[in-house]
Length: 150
Image 1 (cartoon, one colour):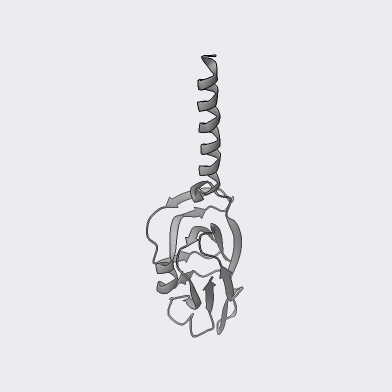
Image 2 (cartoon, helix red, strand yellow):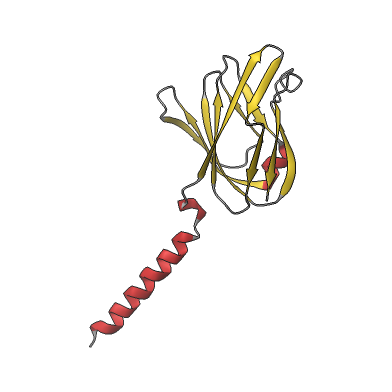
């Protein structure tokens, strides 16, 4: 009979832990969105896709893949203010993480041929939030896009 209270407490703790983990975004499997950064020629650059839709409270991994030989940036002050950044991982040529950055992010610069993974959780809604490559001439060459957060 003395084991019954212990067994009940153990079951209650296990159920509470499972409920907590379901809402714990640090343990969530993020939805992955690949954003290609590149150029057709010196006068035509792009983000592909040029628009993405996100939901507040959902975890995402934005894979910023630079298919070009020159560096590109992913910048958007309004977007950065509307998301919580969990971390940014920089990947080496072998696909393995070589650096991890935590804290507020204002822009992400990706070297030619490089990949960065930005783990975010949108916390505030917004429609057609602008993003751009802030390197001189790249925005003018068409390297712009938008994000909608519902």
